Length: 408
Image (tube, rainbow, N blue to C red; front, side, top):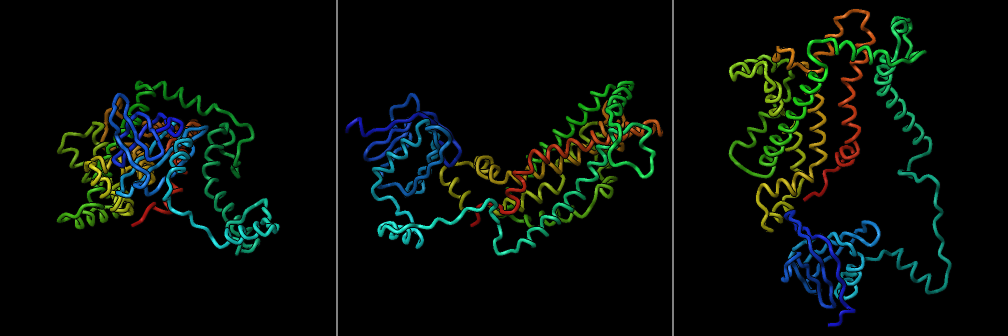
């Protein structure tokens, strides 16, 4: 075989089970094969008659991602340095490739070009309307309503930020100004001075809160995801009853479950420890409910294909299920962080060195009118973390909450 009709590219190969191998892909006139580094035998190979489908996604420059699906349902994803070159070579010698569908409009354009007629190209508008069947007045009305609702939702946050920047003499004006006439950051500096005068350093409160939030959220994510996977994709006696109990638990607020939680933590000897907050967070029903409902939308055929390919149950959960339900667990993280970050824990933690940042900031309100500005600054700090987390993850959440992906 001529070397001129052979194309080679270095890169990685990924199987449907999620395993990755480094090596190089060689495409010839009759087929292709992937060789792992340091191995003379091909890790995967096929001839062109075995091909069912090929896809190419350009990564930048000459590198691209090439997906190969064989007629026996084997699937390989290649990240290649010269992926476009390899793809074009295989496409050239793949003689029985599927015929690309053509619409009636495409055929009319082809015939018009053969007759030498001029094809009228539709005029491109500066603004493309998503709903051309709706009137311009309807568009204007909807956008005005969205602007008004957005302004109403943003106003409390804007007013709170403005209050944190007010000097003390502007807090008691009537009517209260929305934005201070002379903005200042003295409230924040005074807040840190006040916190620094405590016999427990400010950094200690912050570390306590961060540790409780991170540990509780991580444990909630892992336990809720595993339990939801079992409930959504496995049939076992009592599964529906267990999920009904979880759904019923959503009806009870934290004020109702406060006393039972305290009694359980007291019997376990966890009062005045971090576990008094972390352990109940693991069992929050909202995470299990959200993950289970979202996992039910995943096609069972996808999981069965990975199992046939040799993936273990945990491998299916970690490499197949979790990446496909990313919007669900990002939403769950927001709920968990918001709940743990804003928890003062005054009923279960008594030692000052173990208390949270929210509790310490709330104690500033006991200082009276002189600390009104510091209270406003403390409230901005408290609400900042949940808002920042939501802003960083909102695109992923809003993008996929409308449609849960592939359906059976």
